[in-house]
Amino acid sequence: MKNSNYIKLFLIILATVLGVIIICNLYRNYDGNKNNKSYLSKYVSSINYNELANTTTELSSTSFVYLSYIGNKNVYDNEKKLRKVIKQYDLEDNFIYVDCTDKLTAKNTVKGLDNIFDVGNKEIVVPAIIFYKDNEPVDYIDSSEGLLNVSSFSWLLDKHEIKEKE
Image (cartoon, rainbow, N blue to C red):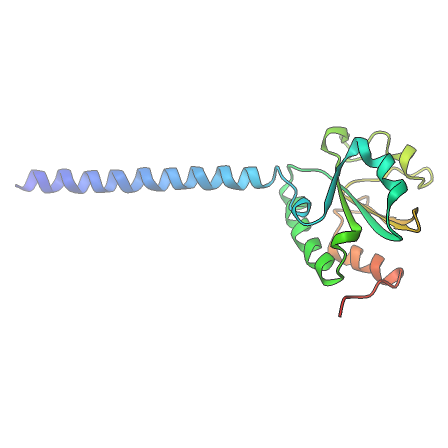
């Protein structure tokens, strides 16, 4: 009788350990896959990098083009914070997400981007946000000084006197 209790206890412990291992692996896969998608692309318009030149000629009077890449947890987490500001200012319809992952260089710049946006001799480091007014790129913020953050975006909104929704 004693041996059968030990066998039952061993099976319960074994099942518990296997269950924990399976749950950990599922969570690790979920967390890894989450970073391979853009958080913002679910809430704003998304276009391919190849369509960027054509799309910028058809922007509304006040628009933002967000150039980014996937596969980085910090970028994903930052997009969650940006989403809150976009919603706060009611910019969902004026915000365009562009996935530049395939065109990304080792320095987090994008090949050929200087042909689309005239920003002088400086390379844009993504993630970056380019502000358009009347179909012309007026200003931009990028990640050259560190990862683009919400305070930089808020500064850009304040600088161009874009007000929160009421």
